[in-house]
Image (cartoon, rainbow, N blue to C red; front, side, top):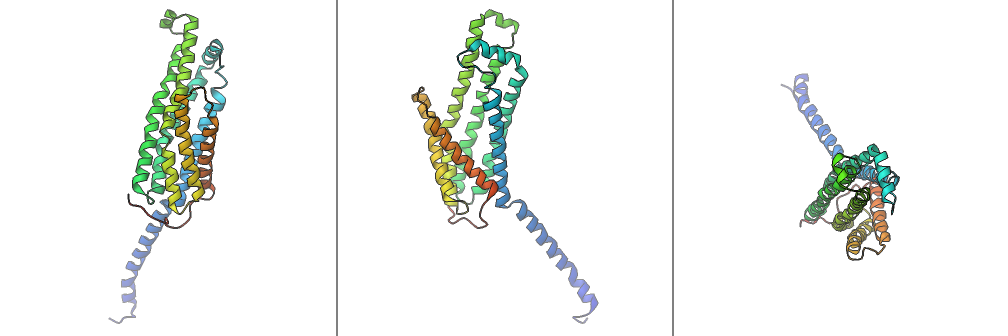
Length: 261
């Protein structure tokens, strides 16, 4: 058979098509698993968490809770019970998304240092069950405001006081989760060492992680001390990081230095 005959050409064509198909499949997989898409997915998840949190903490709850007026707070919650329940569901949805976010970040930053990335995920996930348990305080508020028959054993003033107690307990519980926020410090370290993200973002995140943990420590040691500025600075650092992921993404290059452990 001659090398240039049609039959020999037809015999050679299928392998070429197979190679093209494999190449397209590999390209498709690389596109799906690209760092750019992972980075933007992490940013979108964070922004959803952020807006859900703002809807409850800045709009729903402040419309019901009247500081230093337990009776008015109980009346507001009883009158808007459905809305209060919605706030609880929103917070639980946030916790589910908070379990997803560190796994996305792990996928993005694992090439930098797998051990540090794993520790980041562990410390992050510790916060989630603590936050979910903390939501039981809001369920307690609902029960105390429900007017159930067994509550007649309490006087009105006692019920009102208990409602405020559980609301305050819930606020205090948020600082327990913040104590474990040195996962943000680990995130900042990974960003700083990555080579595909600006180092200034890593520095801001590391400082933010220290601020979150310091804020929790100050709250427990000096409850009257107003350390809101620490939390605000830490949040701004986080927000800038995720906005960068959403708008700019990551550089199309390998990390500057890969660390095994």
